[in-house]
Amino acid sequence: MSLERFLKFQAQTSTHPFVVEVDRAEGSFIYDKHGKSYLDFIAGVSACPLGHNNPKVVSAIKEQLDKYLHVMVYGEFVQDAPVALAELMAEHMPQPLQTTYFTNSGTEAIEGAIKLSKRYTGRAEIISAINAYHGNTMGSMSVMGYENRKRAFRPLIPGINFIEFNNEKDIEKITKSTASVILETIQGGAGFVEPKNNYLLKVKKRCEEVGALLILDEIQPGIGRTGKLFGFQNYGVVPDIVVTGKGLGGGMPIGAFTSSKKMMDCLMDNPKLGHITTFGGHPVIAAAALATLKEITSSDLIPRTLEKEKFVRNYLKHPLIHEIRGKGLMLAAMLPNSELASEVILECKNRGLLLFWLLFEGKALRITPPLTISIKELKKGCDIIIDVLNNLKQ
Ligand SMILES: Cc1ncc(COP(=O)(O)O)c(C=O)c1O
Image 1 (cartoon, rainbow, N blue to C red):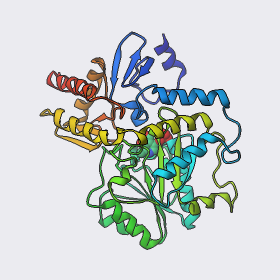
Image 2 (image 1 turned 180 degrees about the horizontal axis):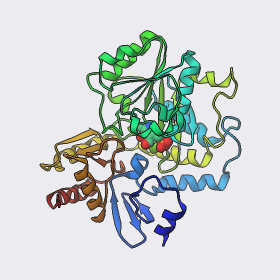
Image 3 (image 1 turned 180 degrees about the vertical axis):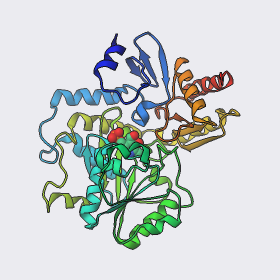
Image 4 (image 1 turned 120 degrees about the vertical axis):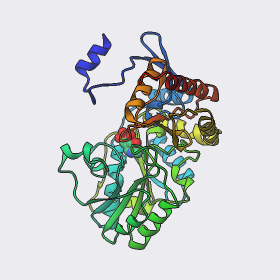
């Protein structure tokens, strides 16, 4: 009944939604209305680092609910939760990344970062990467490097040029006309592609030479998923603007962009109100994010992510898995073709394991469980994948 209503009344994004009729969720598991449990290797597409219904996050939300909800648009009133969250982010970010602007979603934070780079440099060109994904609003879609998914929505914003991720020759295309280069620290939709041979450092050096800014999109790799709080810390680079989202909210909707105070101050003046939002920095969301960030930065979850990666790499072995890409708990098991990957994802779901697709790379099995997952749970999920691969129909 509720499936029919979902299909009838709720806007659909594809002709084949994944469909789990959710009843409740806890830790690494989601339970459906028919009494079935699913081990969750998706974590809300990397958005639930502390698993489902983490008690610390839930109680922070409840505490804030009892005080106040929305009271004013972004940037006018002093509210404890967003201030403490911005301060904690500053504590964990390298200099000079000390000032954070909160938005309602990742894509909105990307929009803010692009605007900030244009406003700060006074330049118009934005350079992005082929196969990049940064979100679905018009600006973010303009810097998406996958023509098939954006052709129908043209015209998009002008002045966007593309380089190939990890191609050092292409770095020369960054010039004195470039406001910013926007890159995912690890390309997500493209297939969990890591930067190689100090690529990000080389891009940053070129940006410095020509006065362009480097924006790193940490919406997916950020908040502990890759064995460091921010993915860029694995590669020795400090961007000019960092964009976060997803996992920062611990299961609540958030986005954020962080830069130096000097840079961010551009948005106050000329024109004033250079970037505004009604709900960005919402106290309930900020309380959830604060509890999430506190837990992730004060526990051993981040280093244990690397142990868990090691476990998956050692244990998830099968002749049909020719590569495991990614870092920490941002992993993609690569199969020979997309038909096989889809068959495995759907059969694993039947068997009570949630895996998912990547946006532009059909051959991948997404493995992005909560950071709180246990080795025992990881083993259970890997056993299901191996068993499904051993019993394929194709
Ligand atoms: C790398 C990256 N950037 C941006 C976004 C957009 O974030 P949101 O869906 O919260 O707008 C996503 C979401 O999948 C993402 O993975």
